[in-house]
Image (cartoon, rainbow, N blue to C red; front, side, top):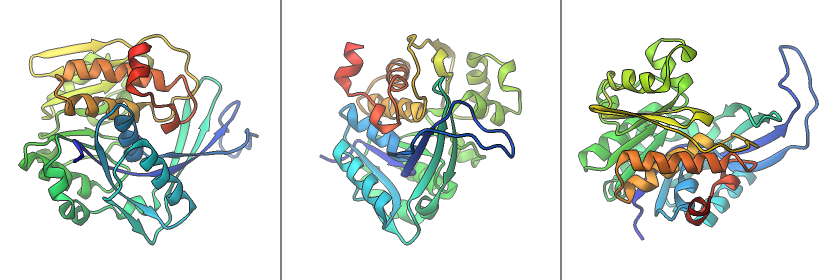
Length: 300
């Protein structure tokens, strides 16, 4: 089946260590055993969408190493098409993640092969992208590749969804095409040049709409999300859950959002569903291993 969603983004091996607290400058703390799990914002988004039943393909790059094999196997097992994932001479990207008892994480990413994803890769895959319904991107790959993907999508009437993480400046024509722009509170505050704690989520979403995108979603962690479209601003609460590990929750949200949009749902309904998926994901350890199937969401 031809993919309804094309994800342009990263694929990393997540090296996860549980710690009682994060070390300060110059300090060493002991952690639990290292757990290696498949991750990366692009791969996570693709797997989250595929677990929910959406036909999805990932465009990215992996190294010819054990971590690359791990990721290819995990993507295939989830039902993600990998024909657009090329093998690079650089090592597979790695994310070094510490998780504290409250489920919060700190992450350092070594991009590796992800840094080689290029605008040329997007042009080569343009036929697949033009036949999709939704493009989903994030920024653990170079900005020119993402901007090229958005341009190709818009030219073919494909809906571009961008999780602007890690946050960066985009060309105005790219920003104006996004439907929606997805950011968390930190990223929203950076884009607006304001203190993140000083502005409620709905006001952040409304202010970001003024920067030009067609719609905006601000994820608010345990509080849910805020959605802004022309003439409409809504806050979507999240169900109360016990967080075990928040790693990859934002990617679960984006994947679920893309899956529902590709299925023809309106943005507000898709955001409500994506909030539930992200909330379920934090109740389990890891990123991709925590993502629910559609029946899990319906039963929750």
